[in-house]
Every structure is written in structure tokens, then in C-alpha cells.
Image (cartoon, rainbow, N blue to C red; front, side, top):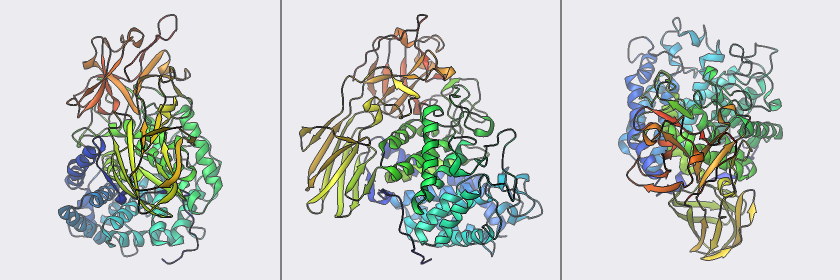
Length: 640
């Protein structure tokens, strides 16, 4: 617990979610819905579907057999606790805190004396579900025993940070110590089929400074792709399904199950930063390029195939049958954030933002209690893409997406700002107040904005004393005519106006460094920086090597990707063509779908992708026909 041999970590430090208070017209209502609807809904479903009772049965407080179709349902309870803990840090709630205390007591009672915690096996070791394996750790490719551990560790650290209590942290430490005793050079050389334990162990290391946990995370990563003591994991004819087809430092392509991959890349980034190890960062930077150049949807979603929930080949991005799992979008946001922390490059935040406002946010209904597991780019209203439904569902047998959403949203304040040496990075445009620690003392930042509908962002800096530093404001790629940085997508034409920057009311030149406008000076209380990001309606084109998008275009305004639902088009979506639309207008609709900016054409109205299917099932398209028989793109004009 006292090993502090290394102080190394990410070169850039994110500002804690506890230090940022949101007062934002777009995000604050969503976080409040998460707090008052989604988290209670997830906790209630964990009770209703037996997730919590399984802990009671494992501790013998309740009789009966394990309930559930999967042996790894424990993890949903851990994610619910993590989300509730983040929420407590933002909005104290004595009733919720007491509920977590009671829930953690059930978990602690279910843990076996040596630290093992996996209710399916503890309830009845002789009668476990098929995926669980005949004995402990016997079927790690699918049992998810270590995956459960990873989410337990993440939840324990979040709960400890939010409340200061050690109740769940102590459970996690007993588990982690068992894992360290069991796996290693002198123990089992096996790994988990579904990554996340690596991230959880790295997080435990940050909390405890116990180097065993960091070394264990590296051990699990190092074992991938090595078959001397075990068979490599694969799924039918997909050898890269678990990213176990070659050593991780040699991987350069995104393959296999998209969620497992994103979590592994996050773990690799943590090890790259904490050890440090350049081979890890080299690998994940190359994999990132593979994704943005050929394997990401315009919404930021990743994972093209329903079968194996996997990445496809390069440019394999079908629209109707896209998978785009919500969990994969969350994993992508976490991965891109880590890449930014390693490099200070805004292109990673550009992808993070595109995913956040589109592919991720679509995963939950406006009401907060219905969920998408999969997120296609097109719907015919009949194909039951969402695990048996053409709309969001109230729950799933494998309920990873609802619980992942409930834990992600309250962590969002931690993505807004970051610091390094004498720099403050402003990454996301979300109104609120923050206390940002710098080498010369804390700086209060007040951010005012109507983003993502309005491109005006105003920062007021209040250092405790006169302070010289660089204030780095991200100028989004979309405002610089770049769509997610990989060349897979491009705007049809340059924006008519460029971003502008004002310092204390006076226009100054925009000096860019890695995608950030840099203002270096001695700051005093009340200094202001105002950024104006023009938001015309833009037509986006796709690399013609994506078959589904040839001769088509999509619409984007600011960071928001749009779609057309059948109910909002005067003609069938198959016949709708942007070629025939010469005047597209952005209109504010404060009472429609929670308050949106709508794009109006002569024959249709386009809505933000993230709100589609909130009015029932029906046809939807992101990509619309755009070219006539001559193959020439029609001109388009739009109100800014």
C-alpha cells in the first residue's frame, strides 16, 4: 500500500469531476435525468431481475438458485454503484448513499474468505451456467470472472472518491490481492476474454500506490497473443475476437469485439502512461488511425457486425445492419480521452466529442429509462436491430448498455478541462464553473455557452493571484473543415466563415497548436476569452470505398449529426434526395424532442441523430441520396 517507486502518469491531468459544476442548458438536464430516472431505474432493475438477490444467495442470506441467463450479471450491480457514486459527488443524496451502503454490505457478505467474488459459482459450485466453466478461472474466454473484477475495482474507486468510505474499496482490494496471487509468472498465465480488469487494476494502483496492481495489469496485457501455456482465444472463424491473435504491442489494426477492444486500448494507454512504455502508445495510436481512416461511423460509433459484435474489414460500414454498440461508444470516448492525455492533441477530443453527442447519447431515451444496445445509421422500421426491437428497450438479458450509460453520464464533468505544467486545456464546451489546479495555484473558470446549438463560448478566468500560463481552447475539427481527422469523411465544401477569438473583448489572431487556440499571458481576475464557432449546415461526404454511402451525403451542424425519420419527410426516404434541396435552414425548436435545432428542407425536416426513435418505430436515414445520373453534387446553401 505504500510503494511509491514511480510518480509517472499521464503528461496531462484531467480536472476531477468533483471540481467541475455544470450549469449547462444541454447537459445539465440530461445528467439530472440520469440522476433521478436512469440510476433509480437501473438499481430497480437490478433488484427486479435478481442481480442483487444473487449476492444475497451467495452469502446465504437468501435461499435459492442463481437467477439469470449469464454468469457475469454481478457486473451490472457494480456499474450501477459506480454511476450512483459519481452522481453523489455532484448532488449529495442521503437516501441514495444509504442505499449504496446497504448494497455494498450485500456484496461484502457474498465475498468468499480468500477474496473470490462471483455469485454464480459461490451459490452452487456444482451447478453453474455453461459459460462459467467447471472450476474457478476455467473458462476465462467467456466466464467474465476477471471482467467482473474490473468493474468492481472501477466502482470501488469511484465510491471511495465520492464518499471517502472504504467499504467497497476493501472488497475490491481483497479481490485484487487474490488475482495477484493467482495470476502471474509463477501462477496462471491465462487472461480474461473480455477486457477491463486492466483498467480497474490501474485505477486501484492510482488509489493505493500498490505497484502489484499496476504490474498485474501489464501482465494480463503481455499475455495476449502468447500461446505457450494456453490456446489463443477466438470466436468461430474470428481469430481476433478477443484481440488475442498477436501480442498487443504488435497490433496495428482494430479487430474483433469492439467493446473488448476499446477497453483493452484504454488499459494499454494506462500502462503506457504509468510505467511508461512507448511500445504501448505506439500500438494504440496506430490502431486509432486504422479506426478513423476506415472503421468508424459518422456518429463516432464503432463495430460494424452484429455477429460477434465486432469491427469489420476496412470500409465495411453497413448502415441498416450497423451494430455500433452503446458500450463501444463509451469505450471509445474513454480511449480517446486517454490518447489526448498522452499527447495533448485535439484530434482525439474531436472524435470523443463526435461520439459523445451522437453515437453515445443516442443510447438512452429522452425519458431516461429506455435504451439502445445497437445504434444503426438507417432503419426501415421492420428490422429488429435492437435485440428484438426496432426502438429502445426497457432492459436486456445482458444489460451492459443501460448500466454503462448510468455510470458514464455523471463522470462527464471530468472530461471538460485538463492541465499540464503551465497549461489549461478547455476541451468540451459545457457551461458551468470549475476550479482548475495549476502549478501556481487554482484558477476558477466560468464557462458560458449555448453549445451545441450556438457556437459562442465565453470563458472568464479568475486566478487567485496574477498568473502566467497558456489557456488552450480547442477549436473543433468540424470548425476547421475536418471530420474526425481520418479522411474517411469530409465536408463537401469549406465553411463560409472561420472561427474567431476575442481576449477581453478585442479580436486576436487564432494561433493553433495541435488543434488548440493558444493564449499565453499573465492572467488576472475577470479576464475573458470568447470563441465564436460558426455553425452552418454542412453536407458530409464519405469515402467511396464504403459501398453503402456511394452517391449519398449526410448533414451535420456543429458537432451534431442529423437524420431524417419517415414521419418528417413528405416523400419516402428511398426517394428523398439532397440534390433537390437548394436551401436548408437551421431552426430552433425549443418544444420538440426536448429542445433541438432542426434542419428544414423543402421536402423534409432533419432532427439530431441522438433523438431518433423517441416517437416510436419507423424509417430513418442518416445518409441520403445526393447525386443524379451525372454524378455531380448539387450546390447547397444554409443559414448559419
